[in-house]
Image 1 (cartoon, chains in turn blue, yellow):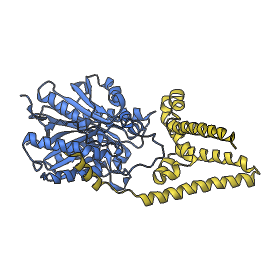
Image 2 (cartoon, chains in turn red, purple):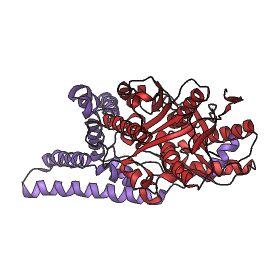
Image 3 (cartoon, chains in turn cyan, purple):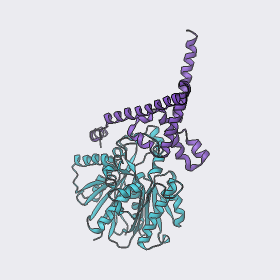
Image 4 (cartoon, helix red, strand yellow):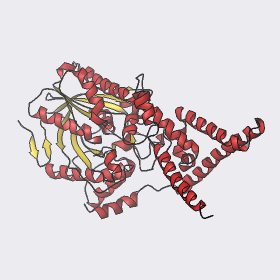
Length: 334
Length: 147
């Protein structure tokens, strides 16, 4: 049976999460969700010569954990889907050689994981493949270097800034029944509300999250109360407050709303408004939420992964920031 | 969604800027850097009997060295986050801009990494410094004909 296509959304009947592998940096490990991650590292390099190589290792370890838990070999996976924040998707493609299977690189900034999950789910639902791994990785130092300033540059950070999370995440999906399934996904539209401040991503991305939220509810003909928990990717504290206001103003009904960026770190960790990066929503949804769902705390969770699709070149050319949000729903199999 | 209305909501919820706290820290830490400079200036003059004219550049070199070492140790960026312009404006800030860029390029080798990147942020200061001194020098030259 083919996936049901409803405007921008897809409903899946048999896409299941087989296993999950997560790796985290020290700060993420020290945060409130630290105990949920499979592996953590003591510093930015963990024995590698550069930050980029360290990032590749985090991805490799996450995939390894994921394969190990499912008791499969890397050749058993039909296709890998993934992406990261670097130019040319460095971390993913430089590791892809070792996987010996096709690797489809995707980029949606911090919404990459949701896009990867979505693409993998579509192929599984349509019986094209038997097993896929969706993965993502991000490293604070490589992201700072690419999008902001050198790591040791002594500049005062704006209080609206977010902190790129360090870590990797890999999720294995199959059509074979397991406790948690991917129930649906909504592909987001690119939204641009003429926001120019690259140090204020929460504000730029909140309208995209709201847009995808509304689209998801409309397509599936449900309201927010269908889900036990609704999570946005990395709007962080400021963006979360904007999102809450947008939901309130349009009288949307929902049970609990929170943000992955706000959950990943505690208030005293000096990460400005909270976490960001593609791995931020991935670590929270597949580290923390996934395990809590297995324990039975949540039944249905909607994850709205947000991404600011900015390029430093275009920011310098004074262009506004296009943003996107892709959503997927995790449900406990009945 | 209406853009104007959205900006209104976003402005309303925006975290407050801590202007007073930041100004105070910038004043105190910037002042402390100045005081350290003055200390070295006096030290070189009194202890090593160097003339005031010569002690100035030596003092500046000392501060640049200290800032570069603190950058390498990962301390200056934390100081910069607290002090803002207080540690950014003095010569130590320039030293930090150069050292941090050089450290960033370290993994790409000496020529394509360190040497090519070292002026990435500091280059703007040098460019405008040269342009400004050219204009002012030219003006001074022209004015000198009339006085």
